[in-house]
Length: 173
Image (cartoon, rainbow, N blue to C red; front, side):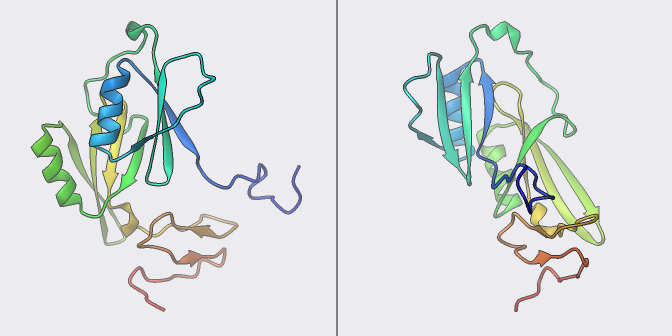
């Protein structure tokens, strides 16, 4: 056990990658590259299975070619309560316009908390894995108890401590 790391017993520093199995490596690379803006990166040559690594937005996506595509159930219904990964965006209206232009089916939801409104767009990758695009940085991240929490957003960089000190989102020191 690492000393002095009670709130982070494993000493984690960041999320490195998300691994996704796919039925068509080419279709998935195209989606993550041309829709979500990831860049293909070198993958270790010692792997004895087909796959690809991509990187973007501070995280890696590792795609693994499924040997038997029948084993991956195809999801057709867009369900925001399903497993998904979420990305912040500069302009939710711009993203929605692009999704329409690209012919990508999506669902739009609005979340309201304390007078703040967050827009969410949900859609599938080629294998039915849910992707969310949002402007979630409008909501402050407030710990329920304990240690300080830092926002993952560049728009919400203020640290909120265990004393629950309120820092307005538009505060500029």
